Length: 310
Image 1 (cartoon, rainbow, N blue to C red):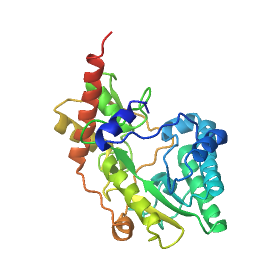
Image 2: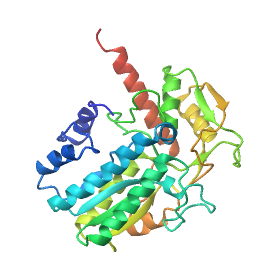
Image 3: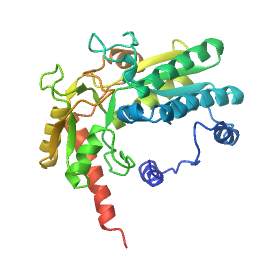
């Protein structure tokens, strides 16, 4: 991310978050944050590396950050008497599911990537910890594929270096930062041959966190460890995303079909009925508006660079 995200949050909410430049995998850093925030009542833990392809190339980096991070968070929560945690999990814990859509009771299969494995292991660590500590209450949200930006274009996805995720690579290609988009494989067993994912609007995803925190603070959780799928319930292929982007942006995208990427699964989408019925959450934003928000964000970033003084 980038420090300017704080400016965007302040413009949207009217409040500037307290910020620490810290490493979640370094316990001394977390100790300082927790010691200086004794009145905290809940933690939302987002701090993980999240790219499937990169995790295949740099597995130790992913295990170090993602596993040590959740261990440090849980340890500090116990030491400081903070009992509520919302954890960012992932649909990658399902691996390549045999039955679609996946429910929260679908088998947790062997992970296809080190990233997916870190989420699977993190969930196991959380599960074991809540069994041993009856004061601890955790909600794990299994994200499907978050995309888009805030409609104000004040905050959005800002990958450092070459994007590992589809939509920012599309928008960066369309704006001229990248020569072309690589579509990884067109020989999957899907209607158009490209991989299928469940693309969820990032603001809808954020709202699921708000509901999860409220659920924990109001003690509405049915058990001290709950898991919810957060997706749209609909699968969309890579080529469908490309075509929707071209439609909403009016831009023709330069792309090429390349070989499959290691670690990628063929297709997955969510059964969200548990989140709908129990958490009281529903995905609301359309795919078209979500992709449009990402394009508006990309154009704003480009205008800021253009207008920046030398």
